[in-house]
Amino acid sequence: MNPFDQQKPIPGIKKVIALGSGKGGVGKSTVSANLAVTLSKKGLKVGLLDADVYGPSLPSLFGCMAQRPEMTEGGKIIPLLRYGVKLMSMGFLIDEDQPVVWRGPMLNKAMDQFIFDVQWGELDLLIVDLPPGTGDIVITLAQKTPVSGAVVVTTPQTLALSEVKKAIMMFKQVGVEVKALAQNMSGVENADGSITKLFPEGNLNQLVEDYAVPAVFKLPFDPKIGMSAEAGIPYSTSTTEKTKTQLEIEKLGDLLTAN
Image (cartoon, rainbow, N blue to C red; front, side):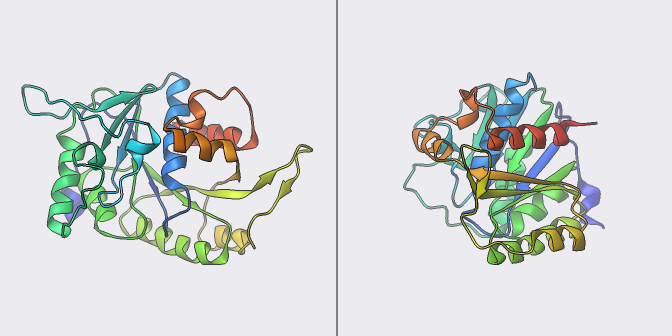
């Protein structure tokens, strides 16, 4: 039997979008959080699933590390609601300093519960913040439910871009279309609108051409985003500034929600 024949839509959810990366430390979770909040502010019903079982960061990014989800009488997990976004993470179920020491089958079971045993309700979009790399979680997600598309997050360096290739191929192998590449920390935006590069750049244009990536969004480094993340308040919740970073996040959201 083809394992993808077991896919089941998640009741009430119109689209599932996966955010992945070839390597850690590229800001994938921060992009996921601000993308979710940005779409919620536009009036969409948005859920955000932190699928990084080993290193969940969503509770910290949304300032709700000490909170625990409630259960319905039918045994469903009720996601937390922060800034208009429904949230679920392994970090809500364990103590902050408790390690998760699991093998593949337990990870698969956890993903099954996060997808089908959470009372997501009606959502226009469920964003799944995947762990870095090309492990079991991605395969499990694709086998469990149809995924409308994926975004691969990277930073400019050659090392990061080499891992992007693996991430793109991983999504293709599990039948998920890569909708866009988000190049995080692409530089610092100066007062005159110019960009100062922070890292030596790899050949992004060649990668986009070789792997037929349909869209690229460049998100400049903004210290305010880092400070907001440290405070547990996603930058997009309160900003009224149309910085290039925020504009790029909005454009990415428009692409992912287009019919």
